Length: 293
Image 1 (tube, one colour):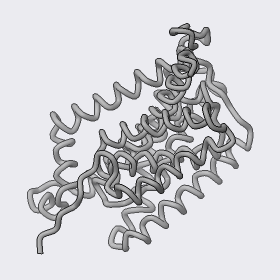
Image 2 (tube, helix red, strand yellow):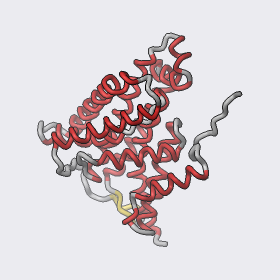
Image 3 (cartoon, helix red, strand yellow):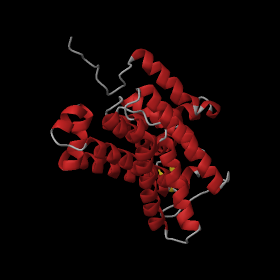
C-alpha cells in the first residue's frame, strides 16, 4: 500500500466528509427542536454555493462579502420555510411533515433552476490554488479552509448551546417541548431559530466546498442524502456524533473509490448506512432509547 496515496485519499475524504458533517449538523439541530427530518437541508447547501457565486459575479463583491451575504440570504430562506411551510402544519404526523420538507426541497430546486439555469458554477479558491505537499500527497489550500471552518462552526455551536440563553432554551425544547413551554420558553421562536441556524450551517458548507466540487441547482440532492446518512451514522439527535459521522463517511467513501472503484463512489454511503441500520440502528455514537412502562 502506497503511503502517499493513502494520505491523499484521507485528505480528500476529510475534506468532503467535513461538508457531510455540516449537513448532518443541520439535520440534527432541526430534529432536536422539532422532531422533523428536514430533507430540504441539502438545498441550504446548494443555496450557499449559488448565492455566493451570484453575489460575487453579478454584483462584483469580494468573496468574503459574497459568502457572508449568501449565508444571510440562506438564513432568510430557512426562516421563510419554517414560517410558510412548517408552522402551518405543525400538528401533522411526522410522515406528513417529512413529505412537506421533500416538497419544499423540490420547490427550491426548481426555483433555483429557473433563476440560475442548469449551468455549473465555481467560486475561486479562498487563498490560491497552489497545492501544498504533505508527505508525498498534495493538499489544496481550500481543503484547509474546509477543515478549519468546519471545526470553527462546531466549536461555535458548542459554545452557543453551552453558554447562551437561546442555546439552552433550544436544548430544553429538544428534551421536552411541553415542559419548556410551561417554563416560559417560546417554543415556536426556538423552532424558527433552529431552521435559521441549520440554513446558516448548510450555506457555509456549500460556500466553502464550491471552489473544490463546483455548484449547480441540483447539487443539494446528493449532499443532503449523504448528510442524512452521516447523521444516522453518528446517531440521530447527537450533533457531535453527526459531525464525526460525516468525517467517517467521507473517509470511507474516498478509500472505497480509491481502492475499489470510483464508479460506486456515491453508493458507498448508502451501503454503509444500510449495513449500520442492521447492526447498530442507533448509530455509532447514539444511545439506545429506554422507555418506562
